[in-house]
Length: 197
Ligand SMILES: CC(C)(COP(=O)(O)OP(=O)(O)OC[C@H]1O[C@@H](n2cnc3c(N)ncnc32)[C@H](O)[C@@H]1OP(=O)(O)O)[C@@H](O)C(=O)NCCC(=O)NCCS
Image 1 (cartoon, rainbow, N blue to C red):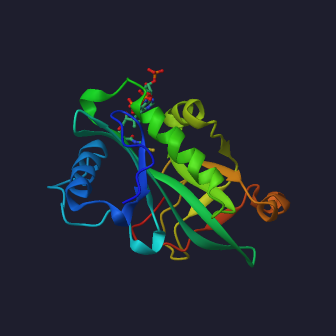
Image 2: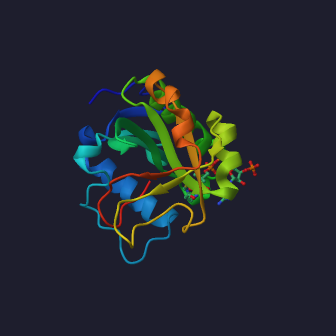
């Protein structure tokens, strides 16, 4: 596993698929708690489908996972054009370690990578409106006027129905050239049922 920085309390980054099972289990357990999921965490479940080619970013504090964020991507079709969309997600800090800028630091590292890796035409994710200042301060993210829709099913999850704001940044020249087409649009993410970003 390639680790960009191994020292204590520095953000470490690696493809999620390369993470040792023990760390994956720790991440799953922390996210289960942070997102107040029901039941017991499924410790063997892969957090990110391999097709999403997720990259993990995390901080350790004295040998214990402290904060996590990930970047993952997929192809979308928007107005008959194909774009590669990269998303930031699964952001969490251990409850007793919050308020120490650890969340901000993993988000900053993940955002720098998302913007610079060259894989993605578009960066997009959703968050609660109250968390927008956190993402703005961590990495300069801003909300945009569009709706993200999980898929073309009638029951599809939608950012507006979920009361979420959409963060959007057009990264490639091709995406920036299509800027007007994203304004006010409903963008179909073509995700499997139950999945959202
Ligand atoms: C959001 C989260 C990752 C922040 O982690 P953290 O390590 O405490 O982050 P930082 O110390 O860098 O920043 C904390 C800031 O975020 C703000 N914040 C945290 N959760 C918030 C929320 N739900 N709504 C509004 N602001 C929030 C805090 O008020 C604080 O701001 P302040 O310093 O002005 O008081 C953490 O609270 C968490 O794990 N929450 C549960 C999971 C979650 O909501 N993830 C984001 C999903 S989009």
